Image (cartoon, rainbow, N blue to C red; front, top):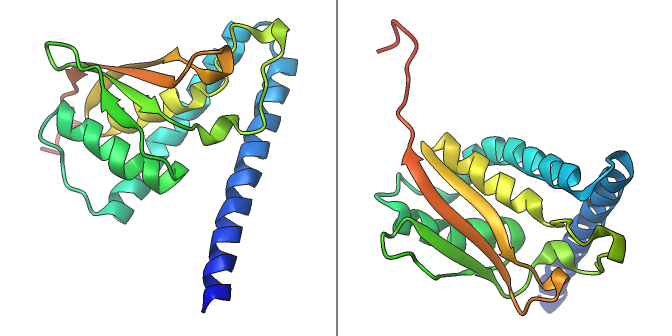
Length: 180
């Protein structure tokens, strides 16, 4: 019995490490393909957005979570369910703005940055920018327009990794004519 649980743990760790190394190879290739870090950051965000647009369907099917009532509930679901489901971490939700439309996700550990050191010539690279795009794309599919960006990153010498998320507006569903 304990052998089976060890195998499951070992395979999850191996899958996590494979994902981390594959992501590193992707970022390395983007750095070679594009002239500056800003272009790489844009590409990572764009790729993440496209992943998020597709990932939300899988998330909703696997989690059986219904529609969130507000941005606070959405943030809790992202933190406690989505990050746990896909990255195996649970960021804390903090630093709410007084209006309740902006928050921070604090990642104690970021699995994307295991084994990573940023070279000096890539000081403006936002290595994990894919996550911002994933959040933006997934939330857009559930009618929430948000702005997502990294505020702090341990790869840049900060104490924590912080993703800032700002609610912009609820997107109205526009049904094609005749589909009402």
